[in-house]
Amino acid sequence: MQPFTVPADLSANIAEHARLLRIADADLCVFPELSLTGLEFEALAADPGLWLAPDDPRLEPLREACRAGGLHAVIGLPLLADGRRYIGSLVLGPAGETVATYAKRNLHNSEEKLFDAGERQVIVDVGGKRLGLAICLDAANPDHPRELAEAGAEVYVLSALFSEGQEQRLLDQVGVAAGHGMWVVLSQYSGKTGGMATFGGSGVWSPGGAAEVRLDGEVSEWAYATITS
Image 1 (cartoon, one colour):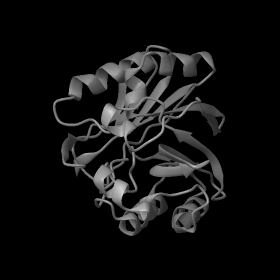
Image 2 (tube, rainbow, N blue to C red):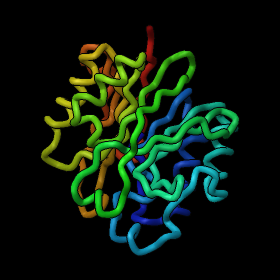
Image 3 (spheres, rainbow, N blue to C red):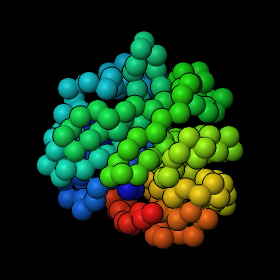
């Protein structure tokens, strides 16, 4: 998914995410890194109200949309958990339940001032497939996809931001994960966020690295694929 993200506007972005979930014809929808706010670090540093715990009532429209569609969703958000602040992914299930949370383990220098690093890998089961979660720079660390593959992950789910000029980097990182025999599902931005221009390119790659489907630069677009054995 390449959603349209309004900078630092939780209400607008939750509403748009819920709208997209309600019209998606899929078992799983994946959104980019920090998709509920964009990579708006100055706003996040200044406004505590932009941070979300997994049980935050403001997330109810997303839970209801998952219930309505009977689907799983991986949502990018500034995550509050155990008194710490993370770049997080929240996995919601078809009953609107919290299936898991994941915190980005590999941070840029600029991110280290605002966020804590996650300390664990996370694998969730969706439709009988084992999905390993990753956020952006995680995929640049070759140990990250390797560890997930060795732990039995069949799909590498990457929520990310790649800015203009990083097209080859995107493909290289997808190739590393796919080289471990995993499917790769990538959701990244189109348009601008955090002052950075992006280029789209979300998609799904089969084990070995062949692209099953890729998007161009559209916003509020889906890349659909069926993940097989």
